[in-house]
Image (cartoon, rainbow, N blue to C red; front, side, top):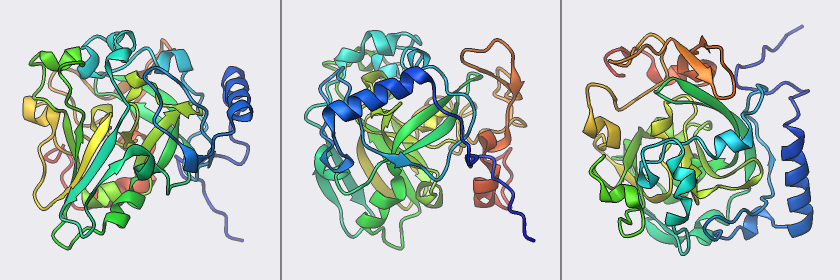
Length: 311
């Protein structure tokens, strides 16, 4: 008899029930509002709307990081460099109206209003680990859809080898963009096969609700096997490119932040080890997993590569 082993990222049949508060909030909001995925509209700044979604095919049965921590301990330099700054300054991010430009080496470029960009896709929930380069981590129930759906619809040409992303540029309202902490706007990139991988998610919500501004509303990337800064927030542009695109942190400090930025306990940051991490809400440190625990799904993307050279 063939016995199938479970992937690290795959949920058990009896997957852990999220925190009671989360379930009560999600069920109440969904019943009260009855909003379906195809009717998703851009939320007003600071507002939360229940999302309708299905369980995802990928996930983890680890304990979820509390909603309060997920939404008050953030890296989002457009809203400030302190961990509490993004939540404190969240009302600076104006998410209405919002549009997304898809362009570059593709047959079907276009400018899309947010509701038109999202409406074709059914949403699903995926519980992913998020590992930050500073040594802390979270487990978050994201709501979104696979990035490859958008990329396939745009029909990349044969010359497309990478996908570049760009966040909003609005220094009149975003106080962090009035400081030269980084070169604005924030940009990121993936190799095309990484972007097309089914683990790569475009998230529009977490904990069953629309994304709070401090978490990257209204649309952000989630690439769970890479360090958190690769998961660019508040996306306004997606571009297919032939050449490796610039990325914000690699451009700022190339010796510390490589293009790939895969979670790798064997590659230290110049100023600290990456061998252990601290889950937010815990005091103990735990071993860092290769590819953040998603090696079974993504290791083949890097066959033959020196991951210390291509960090």
